[in-house]
Length: 202
Image 1: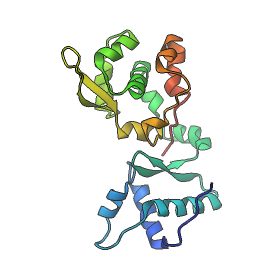
Image 2: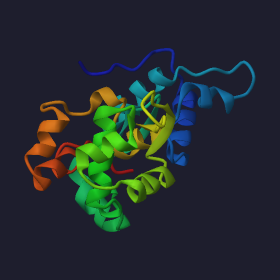
Image 3: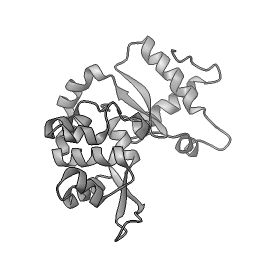
């Protein structure tokens, strides 16, 4: 059902939300929005987003606002992805190696998961890959497993959600179990990220 703009959302509130969305490189949350406002001024972020999206659609803009993690972010429509990627010459797929993508998929589907468990699924040492994913803040340590040696447990982050245009890990495609994907071979395993992701270009 198409979102309807709220009558309680003023033009100024819409402008403020739009300005912050454009200026921010991370999702705008209700908490962060209201921290930026004067005392006593509060904005219904979801209402402002709905109103802006109605305007963008009616005026055939190339972008819209989508929910990402606990907030909202402006993204371009998918039909412009190739030309935008060519323009900015950067993409998640290009910056992450196959090994990193595969390990990230394992963590995303099995989190929280320890390094030994990741290596058992992939069949190779993952130390360097995990370091890369930690440095890029796509994963983080959530605690320690109860297994021998109490290895660290890894989970995906809000940055992971932002990169792949997801609102929560529950939005990951679940048409097949992760183990089945990796049993089909290297090419099929890569499809977990490359064919099924929901990357949005900002």
